[in-house]
Amino acid sequence: MKKVIFIIFIGLFIVGCAIPRNGQASNADILENSSWTLVGISNESLNLKKAPTIQFLQNRASGFNSVNNFNANYKLSNNNLIFSDMVSTRMAALSFELSKIEERFTNTLLSTDFFELKDDFLTIYGANDSLIFKKIK
Image (cartoon, rainbow, N blue to C red; front, side, top):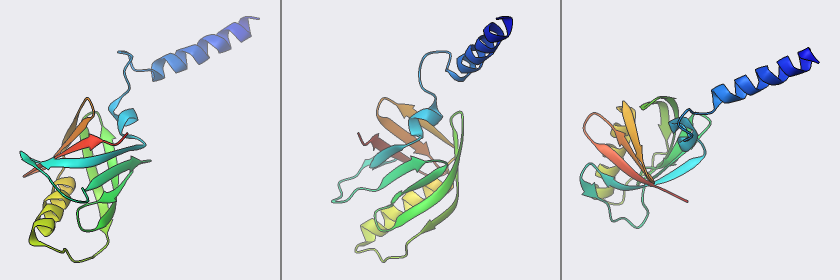
């Protein structure tokens, strides 16, 4: 009987350690299996027929950067976010505007150091720009 109680206690201890202390989901939990639509770059809002997107799934990010589809690895630790090994299709942009958005989007992801989650918005901060996403529900 003591062994059963001990095993139950250890199981509850392990589960308790896995639950965030404040009762809220961690940043990793919020990003995992989530999809986001780009609504702005730095302080500029976007008005595009097909907005750039990003999805997070099992340490892989994928999406559309306004011209091409992309895939990348990502690592998450607290509010630090690092993208690596990015690959994308190589289609030509239909306009200079879309080409610039693609360039800023990609450069920001590749230079990302940290991010911020607030309500249904994800902001990814890069060396020169920030990408502001709204969660797709």
